[in-house]
Image (cartoon, rainbow, N blue to C red):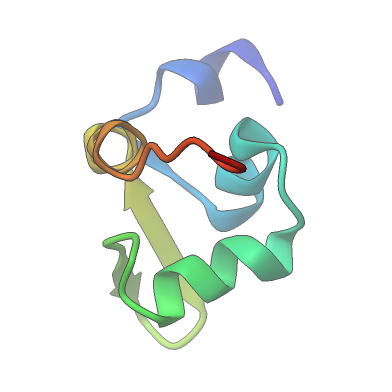
Length: 66
């Protein structure tokens, strides 16, 4: 990922997956099930707002194994 994409307000799904450290398929699953808000631009283009991602991460924090 280049420096410009780290500052962009809207992320592609591959960029999202890279930032989260998850496979692309998992990123698509989060969007498909409605856990992570995204917008569709045309038939194949999906974008995720960086602030929505930050909100998702802060709201969905869970400690596993307690």
